[in-house]
Length: 97
Image (cartoon, rainbow, N blue to C red; front, side):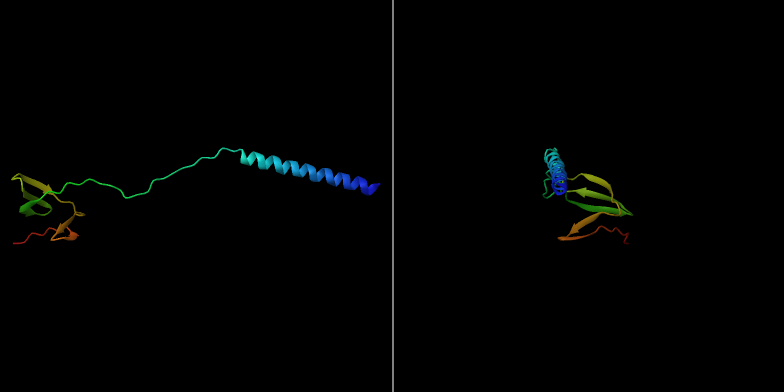
């Protein structure tokens, strides 16, 4: 008789634990989820290429005669790069006599 009582009590505890686990599982599945998508690809940048002839240099200041005939004064930053004869190089300006 005592073993029947212990078995019944153990069965009730196992059933209760099973219901609790099932309740947590159902609650976890019912939670709202979100989806984020990211688009990867090459960045695009629009540039304008202009051509001209440097007619005067002093320090980082240039006077350039553009192909259109316009004369421009340009201050070149230290980090500037230029393509000369197809080679990308640091844009260094030196005063040569």
